[in-house]
Length: 90
Figure 1 (cartoon, one colour):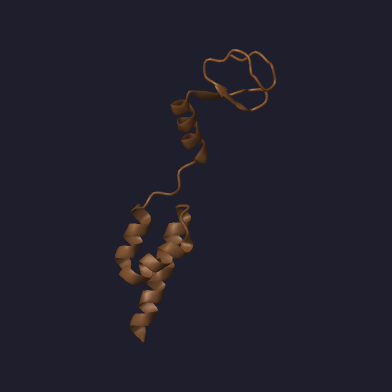
Figure 2 (tube, rainbow, N blue to C red):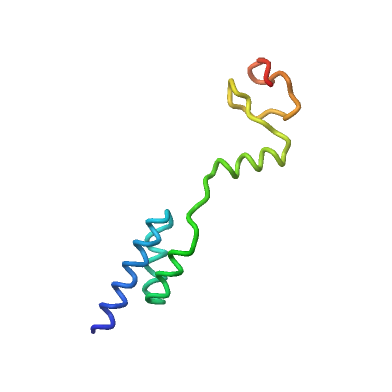
């Protein structure tokens, strides 16, 4: 009985550690529940989610696109006039 309580506490701590890093609580809970204190370390080591904006910038650069500062539409990187709002862009 005591072992169940200890493993439950390990799961709860693993979930709290995971959620403090921005990861789902339940993922950390199950890692802590299954692996005990080692699960806490795994939950602490796993990086949090990456910001979506940096991924989008990388995709735009790879596709040769940039964002119009006036209308926020995606245009070709070499464009001098936005095809959506007809404004001059840098």
